[in-house]
Figure 1 (cartoon, rainbow over the protein chains, first blue to last red):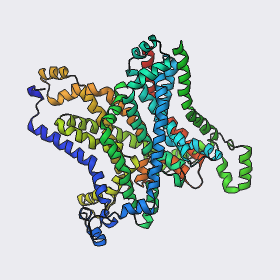
Figure 2: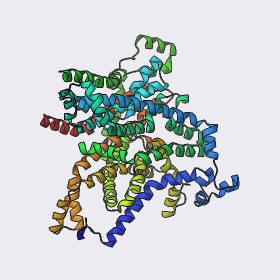
Figure 3: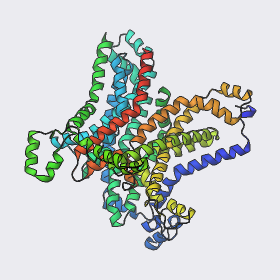
Figure 4: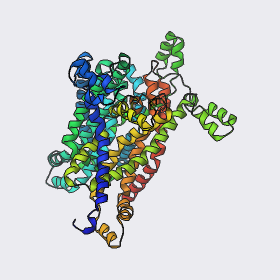
Amino acid sequence: MSSRARKQPLGLQILIYGFAGLWLIMAAFPFLWTAWGSFKVELDFFSIADWTYALTGERTKAEYGSPFTDAGYKGAWVQESFYRNVINTFIICFFVVCTSLTIGTLGGYALSRSNYRYTFILLITALIFRAMPPITLVAGYMLPFFQWNVWGLMPTTIIVLVAINQPFTLWMLHSFFQNIPKELDESAKVDGCTQFQAFRHVIIPVMWPGVITTGLFSFLLAYNDFAVTAMLLSEENRTMVPQVAAFLGTTYTEGNIMFAVASVVSATAPLFILVMFFQRQIVSGLTQGAVKG
Amino acid sequence: MFFFIAMPILSVIAQSIFIPHEAVMETVKNCGPFGCKEVISINHEATSELRAKQPLGRFSGLEIYLDRGHLAISEVNAAWSSSDSLSQFFSRLGNLPFYRAMGFTLTFTFVVTPFVIILGLLIALAVNSLHARIRGLVIFFSLLPFVVTPLIGALVLFWMIDSRGILGTAVQWLVSDPDLSLKASTGLMWISLIVYGIWHAAPFAFVIFYAGLQTLPMDQIEAAEIDGATRLQRIRYVVVPHLMPLVTFVALIQLMDNFRVFEPIVGFNAAAHATSISWFIFNDLGGETRQLSSASASSVLTIIGVSILLLPVLVRTWNDFKGKT
C-alpha cells in the first residue's frame, strides 16, 4: 500500500515501535530473567544487598568460583530426580494427544457431516464442558477412583485428561472438517466408495494441518494441567507441574528455592521450542475458532 | 443410506466420550450430600460399616450448600439484619469463605477481561504497523506468556515481585519505602494477581485481533480516508466495528477462563489474601480429610455460575442454529 495517508508520521512511528518494544520486554523479560537467574545461587537471585548481584552473580562467584553454577539443576534433576517427572509428563502427553486425536477426528468428522438436531446439542454440551473448570470435575472423579482403587495411576489420569480435552478437540476438528467441502466425500461415494472408504482415502490425506494444530493444543492442555494431575496422581507418578509446586512446599523450608527455579526453567524449555517450530499452527489454531465463532 | 446409518453410530461414539462428564454431574449431585465426613472424625468402624451399606453416604439434601462453608444462608441473614449499612453487610459477607472466594473471582474476571481486550487490541494495532521483518519475532515472544504453563508463569512473575526480586525492589524504590512487600497486603496482592492475569491472557487477545486485522477491508479504510477521517477516527469507526465479532469471542473465552482462575493463586502463594472458587475446591480436595462433599457442593455452585455466564451466548448460538436450518 503506497498511498500517502498509509504512511505514518515519524512521531506515531516512534510511538508504535516504543509500544511494541515495551510489550516485547513485558512478554519476554520475565523468562530471560528467570533463565539467567537459574544459574545463580539463591542469594543472588533474591538479592537483599544489591539487585545487580542477580546480573553479575557476586555471591555465586564467591561460592563456586564462576558467575554461573549448575547447582540448582543438579539438585533438581539428580538429587530430587526431576527426570522421572519429565518422563511421566511426556508419557501422559503422548497418550493424551493420541487418544483425543483419534476420538476427536472420528467424532468431529461425523458431527460435521451430520445434520441432525442432536449434533448441535452435542456441540453445545461440548462448549459447556469446555467452560467448566476442570477442578469441579475432579471432585466427582475422586470418590469412584478411590473405590475402584485406581487413584494415582497414570492411565486413569490419561483418561480423565482426554475426557476434559475432548470437547475442545471436538469443536476444533468439527469446524476444521466443515471447511473441507462436502463435495469431496460425496464425489468419492459417487465413485463407489463406502462412507468409511471416503473418509480413509479422501479425507485423511487432507486433514493433517487441522489435526496437527489440534494435537498441539491437546499437548499444551495436558502439559500445562495442574489441577487434575496434582489431585489424581500419586507422588511417584507426578508430572512436572505438580512437582514444581511440591518443590515449593519443601524448599521454602530448606532454603533452596533454586531447585524450583531450575525445574521451572527446565519445564519451560520444551514449550519454548514448541512455539519456535509451531508458531504458525498455534496462531492459526487460535484464530480458527474466532473466525468461526 | 449408509451415510445415515454410519452417522448415528459415529455420533454415539462421540457421545460416549461424554459419559465421564455426565456421570460426574450425577455423582456430584448424589454424593454431594456425602455426609460421612463428620462420621469419620467420630468412629472409624461405624464409618466403614456405614460406607459398606451406603457407598454414597448419608442423604442430607441441601444442607451442605447452606452451611457456613458455602452459601451460609443463616449467617447472611444474620449479617443482613444486624448490619446498619450496606458496606458493613458486605464486609461481614467477606468473612465467609465462599463469598470471599466469589468476590475475588468476580473481581478478577471483570477487571482482567476488559483490560486484556484493550491491551490485546493496542498490541495488535502496533504490531500490525511494524516492519514485516520483525513481526515474526514479536509474535514469537508475545506467545510465550500465553503458552507457558499458568503455574509456571505465575511463579516466574512471583519471584520477580518478591521483595528481594527485581520488580519488588523496583516498586520499593519507586515509592521509596524499603519495607514494602507486595505479598503482605491484600490490595497489592490482588493487583499483582490481576496484573498476572492480564499478562497471561493479553497474547491470546492479541493474536486473534491481529488475525482480524489481516482481513481488514482496505477499500473501506480508503473511503474513510477520502471522507477526511483522521487516523483515530478510522480506527474508531472502521477498524473497531470490523473487529467487533472477535471482541465478543475474546470476551466470552476470557470470561470462562478467568472465572476459573486458580493456578496464579497457588503460584503466588496468595491464599491468605485472595481465594478463588477453584482454589476453594482444590483446598477441600487436597487437605488431609479430603472433604469431597464440601468440594462437590462448591463445584455444583461453580457450574451454576459458569452456566449463568454462558447463558446469553448459548441463547444466541441456539438462535443462530435455528436460523440456519
